[in-house]
Length: 264
Length: 264
Figure (cartoon, chains in turn yellow, purple):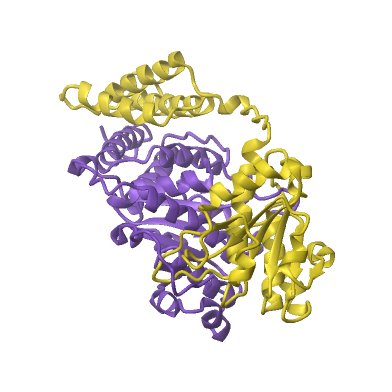
């Protein structure tokens, strides 16, 4: 997925991104912590927080972070979730849909919008529980609301880092939507052709069909109507009209030679 | 993320989900194939297709599939992407944002909507390239459009399975949002052309450009790349392919007469 020619819109407000904390509670596999670090960093986030991980970070964690070592190295470790969210303005807990705790349930996109709306006022957190058992009731009670990724009920268990990826992706979409993006101007040859240019092409196309004897006595209207519909649908650029007319010109030249109206 | 008290809305149309193919091309690590299988299954999808994976599925693949062994076991393996998409109605390639190939670029949510809109007419595909190098230009040219996950340009490389997770998530959102409306059956001559029919047209177009001497010594690739982009964008019908090939045949006939290879 990497590309040296990468070119994307201006980064979203880095100040806002620094307010969004991704908290992993009681993670069992250090490799998942590494993969989560990579996931959040690809989405422009950097604040990873660990609560009582089962094992210390190891080679697997660093390997799966794939370049997000800085995120792993900067991640504070707390003994309890209460400690990790003490200064937070808004705390959302990721859960399977459940009635265990009567919390408001948000869709991922709603959650991202709530987090960004609250972030100017202080740190905000997205909390992810243990691989097998999720968050405890006590931990969920520290959350203002829960977030549920709408997985297939028949096979609902996302990998921890995959869940972080989906939520971080929604946070990034919300950040990009909030940022005052300046759309890039299209290159001149990618400008849409004017009505006149497209009609000029259609006129030459109709001429060419006559010259190559495409109609063979049939009424020409039906074919041209279908061709107009096809090319109008594709919204030709200036450059494409030029290319198509070049091809027609060569087909016409050949037809004129073939019919003796032009010498080879 | 699993929960015994899980309760989610009714599953989306399983018929539609079975039309969405997730194709992994030249994957280097079998573990990523397993993680991708899990990712797509959590989102209610089941059609995994492999193209020339570097190594056979191994223990790591099955371990990381975490219960999606059925998806791995059912995944066909093809030698080339062209073979894997031969019967597809719409093919979208996942890329970093790039100008290497001039394809229409879709956001993940737009891509999901396009796939679901086309799925009633035939199989549709989301194509993911190699971990380090993505899809080749030749492979991208088999795609109707590209999809870009709007990652941070400063750290843009998502794990392969994480990218599959994000796109499969968007497909699931689109499936859940889709009303169970039965689309009107298109008229037979308005059926979308298959991949194979469109490639047959491109092959004849390339031949015709040679025969009318369009290139005049220039490399033919650039023109064909632009023409592919134009015609893939317009999603040709069976009838339109027939019409265009009829026009090409007459242009070829004239060119053969003009150059003395055929008598008038």
